[in-house]
Image 1 (cartoon, rainbow, N blue to C red):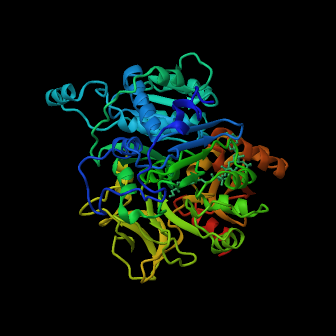
Image 2 (image 1 turned 180 degrees about the vertical axis):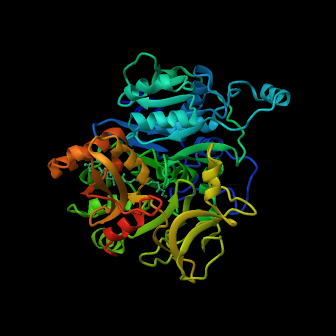
Image 3 (image 1 turned 90 degrees about the vertical axis):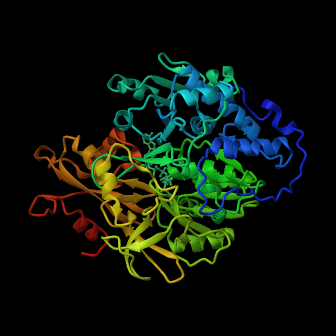
Length: 588
Ligand code: BCO
């Protein structure tokens, strides 16, 4: 039981709501496709709206949030409870922690209920939030306030000490929220992060130097007036890998959340009675979309299973035992489920996948074994959802569907010229003359990289594709050296830097390599230092893999290793990764 909140807390099941809407009632969108309201805040416009609907008896008596952990613990919250708890969290941030609007908060949490509270609490946080509105108005007239909340920066729990240090230093984060598992790593680098003032621990135990998040929430006031954020005010940052260097900070505005409210985004056609389970790690934009924005915008139930380790058998069991109606996961998850003995899932109606290309045969097998279609979505940390096979739309096998409004998605050449149908080029999103909401604002503190991805009037995704005359996009691959393995975007330099720290590695080149199970995996070509030349290669491979898992997030480790005497290079000494990639895909 999470700090006393379980299904009987606040008596969700006994709430005497009167049903005015049928259980099939679709969550009404309140904006049109190209409307750009001046203000938008997911906490007040969505969460509080549904809390009010509940109060008026206009929403099904299904929970807003349903969490299990496989060890018999369960949490169920109504929207009213989410409103109450996230207001408390906003007060914890602003009153107990002294965080201010625009401060950065690193959030490195597994799938625990507090992840939702932190995200929404950040969105609504206003350091004047406890003051009556009239007083706030007067204060605002006196001082020019920023109108954003606290900017939350999700990160996967696979991050290691160096990754955490890099993130805290790059962002100058004022605070971090994490669990017992990663607190020692944070402590080991905290002295190198002068901006870090607040450490919040999600745990049943206390730890020296850390604030106890759970007890602070319990004792905080549930009164908090949500910040009036503008659509283009910053809301969140995702760290995302590029071809060179370390991950960049893709900064998003509240417009990212507004996109979920558009009528054209009848992507999943969620109803208030739907129960949506998205298994993405909370560190990725897919989780922000699938575990938070999309389901709650429609007033649906978010389902979550705190899986410490990925196990397809547990996924199958959960889909069979709980009344889940919609399921979102990376293609790799569907591939792993298909390797098991499947049963049909009694309540499942709709499945959606994204993060890496979906192979047509996976779609076919899924359809055969479950009777359900697999709907592909495409997007990046910079763009959020960009293309999709909408529910009910005609499906073209192998296509990732059509552009999602308000994005104008085109296939462009290297100068930003629009290419005709069925011509290979880069996927571009129009950003001039007007940047659409939902598209990232910039790479924080990195105007060079931000400028690099601008191409004429477009944001250049760096992904190659074609579009047919019906507007369906067909993904082809990356135009650069970035690797997409199991739905993770991995910069080769991050893996090469980790390998370089091992005494056996003189130099290395990391590229993607096709793989029958995982689609693509990370492969390292390694030139050994003289003293390791006589070492057992299998042993060395294992040692290097374990080494990478230790120094950086383990999902990046090279699943394939090849020892070579030299690396192919240009006359200026640049590694020709392209050549290695071609060799891997059998083109050479
Ligand atoms: O393969 P190994 O068993 O040797 O190693 C695995 C893990 O066991 C290991 N590991 C994980 N945590 C560790 C650890 N080792 C040491 N310490 C830790 N704390 O490291 C390896 C990690 O690989 P993995 O994450 O691929 O593991 P696994 O278990 O095979 O997981 C499979 C998937 C499918 C669950 C996982 O790959 C996954 O979640 N993929 C999806 C990622 C995703 O959601 N991408 C979406 C990004 S957002 C986006 O693209 C926009 C789309 C709209």
